Length: 334
Image: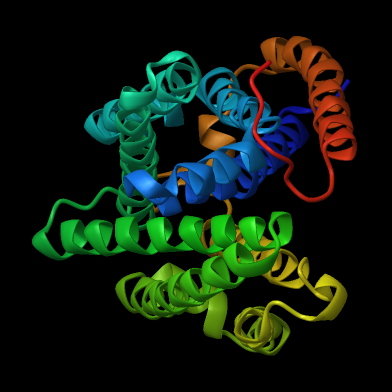
């Protein structure tokens, strides 16, 4: 049906879609967990935070399963290298995700006196998963280099990704809440946005300086002129969102969705920039997508399943957002 190289591109695109969808969708609900207030008197506020992600967060994590599945089946050689290098942070991330899932369910059934404890564990799980993902991204970007500078960069990346998740999570809450709570969250989201912007700038600076390949991809002519709108648009989105967040709440809730759309655009552009920086490498500087791809016979068989499963995930995801769209209502487990 398709030759080997075309199949490699198709599965690389599917992998990219799954990773981007996960970063945006689970990114905002991880961010809500990171921002969860912990004081005992904030129980009602915490219920609103949880209620805003309740109908979506399970489906959001589906994209992570899909991404790992595609990497394992379509690019097994790359999967072995990546998992071998990231075994400990992957374990840390899974512990965080499990902790989130357990505490999310148990907070509904626990005694009232224990509810705050489960909320603390939900926040802890969200931070663990975010920090681990940021650390893995930092290690991946520098090609799993074993040096003090590379590990320091991974730590910086973990802080930046956590701030970015808090930023998009805060923007989500601004869109889903009203009044005094919305105003308070807007202030927190602004501060998270400043940290996220600083982190993205640091990564954009360090990445080309440490890789000749990335430098040539971004600063060769005439490509540099075509790529310049990407960082410029990211900067404009940060400014736009910050201006709206500073003025919230506005009359008739005008523009409450703008910070979230701006954050979504920033995530999309950063992902495009990262993908462009390393293509065609699936393991930076070591293995291209064409070297890592599985046998065409197995890929053609898997492609049939992917063409059925991916549209189904898109349909039920779109349906759930359509049904539960609008402001968050009072949390009710019954």
